[in-house]
Image 1: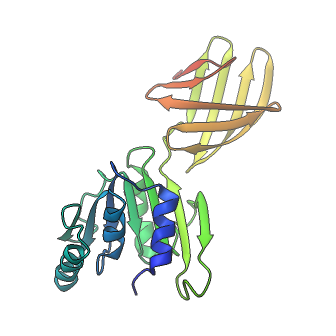
Image 2 (image 1 turned 135 degrees about the vertical axis):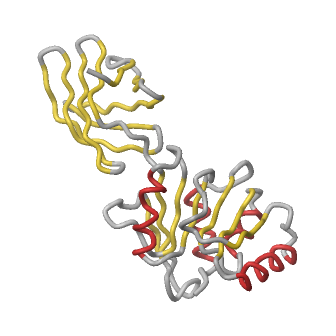
Length: 224
C-alpha cells in the first residue's frame, strides 16, 4: 500500500527536506516519496527489493521531470548502507523498523527520520501528526525523529558535575554545583541538549568530548 500524497508532504515538512539534503527512502515502491523530495530540491534515493517496482519508479521520476535528482536501487534494505542520508524515510512494518533501529540510532546525530504510521517501539517520536480525511483514509499518521547524540556519562568542569543517564532522546540524572545537587530532566535533539535542574532551564550542544553551555555551566568535559 503506497503512502498517500498528503502524508508524504507532511513527512517531508516535519523533517524539513530541501536542497542540500540527501534523502533515502527504504521500501521505495513506485517512487512517490523520492519524487516528492526531489521536487523540493533534495538529492533522493529509493531502495526497493522488487525489480519491477524499481523500473516503475525510474519511469515515474523521469515523467515527473526529476530524473537528475531522483534515483533508485534494487537492494535488500538490511544489506544496504543508508547511513549517509541526512533524511531517512520508511513505511515498513513495526518488526522491520525494530530491526533497523540500532543502525538508525548509530547514524550521525541530527539525522532526521520520518515514518508512515509505524514507530520504533520504545523510541518515541519527537512529533506526530494525523492527516485527516478526505486527504487520507488509511495509514494516515506521520511521525518524525531526530537521531540524538550520545551524552550519557559524567561531565565536569571546576565545581560543576553533570551526571546524565540517556534513554534514546530522554535525559535524567543530577547536576552538582558546589555543594548543591538537583535532579535533571531533559531531552536531546541531534547534538542539542536541554534540561531543567533547580528551577533553571539549561541548553547546550555536544561536540565530541565537550558539552558546551552558556552561562554558569560553561564547557563540560566527559570523563573521570
